Length: 344
Image (cartoon, rainbow, N blue to C red):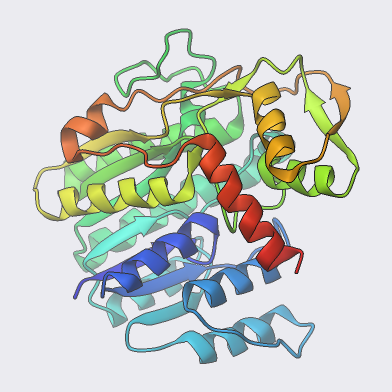
């Protein structure tokens, strides 16, 4: 049995990954701050779903509800820690109290547009928080980590598909800049302290439990309710949407790689390698819902990239990864979850 420490463990990807690790018979220590970026109760439900539990929360207070959740889900194989990654002292306590085999660092603030509004907060959480993770690993002797980066680091890269060898020195948002900074920071700890690292460049992850502010969730809800959707630009911008189970599959393949090799520093795309335009994305959601969208056309937003498109050659050669779900199949699964778990 291996012990995985997952930061951001109550989030969309983190809870889905936790569920997979538990299913495989391994142990999870999930760290999450339950911050106010969106309704923290969504994360409570993520943890319940991942642990196949249910709980009627009686309090309106976050601390009490998280404590009730922790009391319910803590077990031999799963432990929930209500901790902010900026709290170095608490991180050090967790690492010292547990024998950790591999860290999967997913915690951080997401979103391009919010990062433009508060770039200092994004630097503080995403960069300083990540530095804390690497520093406590150095202090406690934990040597294996996979950490979330983002396709946003590619900016408006002219060459497609995006390769890990492309120059990514031209970020167009503070969020993207924070992720590039983390890749450089990770290499420093690898070089100086022999920490084995895989940086995960995720490409537009979607699926059950995704954040409600993200386009697919937002559009599904608004179209279903007969309300206008915000439609930025002419609809030609495209994203390499990747279903969350495919992301988890890639992470676990790369986890096995880093655990079984030494002197590792790798940056790896994880995507679907099949970009979908904004116009096509809306059309697929309309088709699956059986409803027509009401469109509010708006100008392009600052910091938004024109397209993302993952070259998967490296991850295929490294660990044999390929995506299992088409975009439409992923939308069908997301909509099914939405009606069963959100709109019930």
